[in-house]
Length: 303
Image (cartoon, rainbow, N blue to C red; front, side, top):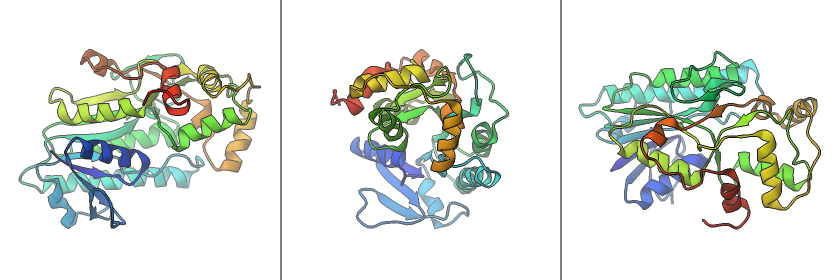
């Protein structure tokens, strides 16, 4: 199958491209800066306007990941940047697909579980109602999904994804670094829920979304075992063989986020999401539990 990947230059995009290419798919990466020597064909686009790249979409599966990283201060300017960087490419893809005689047979649209905001202890599945805020989380996520709604294609799957745990990525590196430096205690109250997924399972979910004609609409790409922040930090200490650590108060998180130019809500809020639709469809997770997932990624466990 031919797969056109928008946003394929990021960490997850490269992972998806390599995974699909390994099974024999023809992967085409839409990028603002094509590079020579890439293992996959790269096609230039500006992420805003329809251009010659549009013909690549004819009869091809579309996987849309385009968007700036959310790891930045929650200012009005950054909210606008995050929204624009997702909405404009999505609208450009939709406009391009609308002009084709053969629209994409499937459109896999990236999304985020942050669309539920800070949801407390409620168990959230695909029928749960998105939150109104905060703007940098739920606001951006709602705009992203709205831009993809009604995009031409036989079938659309919106993957609302949890934290993807993978080697050498900012999320896991930062958490592991805290544990290694003796700062691996709970963050804030430690009661906030973390919805996560091992990269192996994430890639399998993407393949399932492309291949399964019976799968459409919102799908939670997250493990069936969400954990509280305190459990996550304890698991990291266990896998990295670190001793118990003092908690990090919320006030200190705010100070640290200011210095690191990131959003403290990324650490202090959470949501307890489950992959109800995948489980009903018989999807089997390779890493349904956190400790084995972390052992694989950080502790020299099975690959």
